[in-house]
Image (cartoon, rainbow, N blue to C red):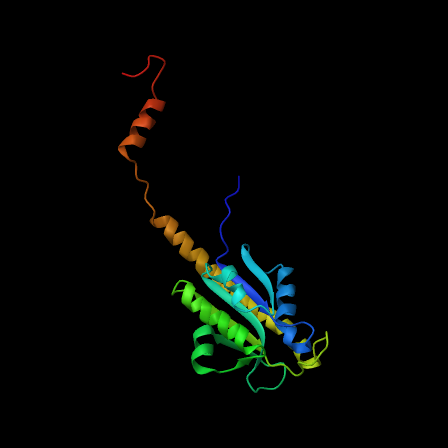
Length: 194
């Protein structure tokens, strides 16, 4: 039986795919689902327009990567990397669905471990009107967004793997008296206990 480990890294693509560029996070998450460069045991979610409802999927993770359209006043298609605390403290940019992402990040800071790392890769939208296709500058940014996410995920995965190996190396085998007596009985021959 294979041992199942909970995912320590969660990726959430956020956005509304029928509002043109607003769906860039969801499009990126869908590409990551089939990307062979993604390390094992990383959970990738299509968060759509949900906000705080996503907390239960990410609260136990050590690392959370959000992908979203983000209005930070740059030219359309520009990709910005912001950590969760910076985003909440500085109001550096606004998600197109500001409250949903801000509420999600706030909720994660309340319920998750204080060491949880949250990062957001945002793409400056050009168009958030009704439509199911991305604008040309945001479509051009999609592949670099996926590449940036892959680099971030590989870095997190490597740091977790190194940490896990260090933890395993530091473990020592302890034998309780009861375990010692069970072990000695297994070695008893046909004459029985002596």
